[in-house]
Length: 504
Image (tube, helix red, strand yellow):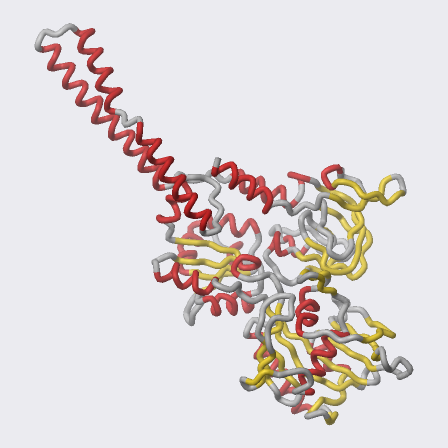
């Protein structure tokens, strides 16, 4: 009964495929069950929807898809309709003209033709790969097998000696055979399986009280024998919610931001003091740009849009009327809008820009210094570049901000560092496991810098530790891999095939 409940709970956790989708059949847009899709159907995607099947895109408008459930990469993947060469190493991230079943549309909209459903999808391939792996016997099962063999061997030896002695004493052979069978039956402990099952069931009940799902009874015993744990990063060790953690202003202020997730819980700290409202105009300007130059929406602590923009919205919110827009593209790597305040709609408006530092700085001629716009010198550019590089080496995703009355003549405002933060309680759990002698290895599809930053925060990576990327795994044979894996604590830029090789 406990295993059945666990199976049902896992089924609920595994429902990544949406129950309904929008499909075009016979020239009409219909809402239908995702399980009724067949190859060749045309599916329409929009923000906040899960992809119901593997699709080849033939129409895409600013489409970004969160593939973290498939690849572990927290940054949404930009999609297009351009033909792509086949990936030789099975890298899913390189197939930018495909949308995979179970992934989430973060922004934009698209249409695609169904090319795979169910077990014929990319998720299906992962499932079949997992099914093909034979589950090794647990230590308890091995011990039970050994005990059974030893009991059988000793029993037959003793029974054989007894029958031989009885035959030498002149006893009838059939009587001795009957005695031998009785002794063999008596030697088998019939109550042992019952005792073991009850003990394991009690262990499962204790695990349930600690909010842990145990799929099979013998797994309870293997937890006590565990000496290595391989854990995914995105959504397991971390929240899978991009969060602003640092703000650097153009006039030298460096603020820390507390709180986690897409909500208003947390504070902005400048030199240890909490910043309220417009207490620091330089920080307020950056927050203003981040909220105005934004296409995402947060509803009931749920993000509809890009995680990066959700992080900025969670920092603060303003009310403006958008007059003009330059949308973000993967080629430009910046976004700009011209807005006016609702109470000043007769004014020409102000341009607000955010994006990659290298792109934003090209539009800037001034930088903000204590509320005044000063000419942007080469020395200041180098200073901002150094700060950007410093934040990048810490594993942060860095965005630059600017505003002004004219495009090409903007005022540089500062930088914001964003990261997917660790879950609360994870660091303490990791510390407890390590102190108990359990080795923990983090496996992620993220870049090496981001992975090492998170691993360092959790105590999984210290100076002198080694990390291994997916490309490096491809270049190693199984013997070389078995030699190096025990020394590696962080596996980066990996996908499903790499994970399977690591387990082998």
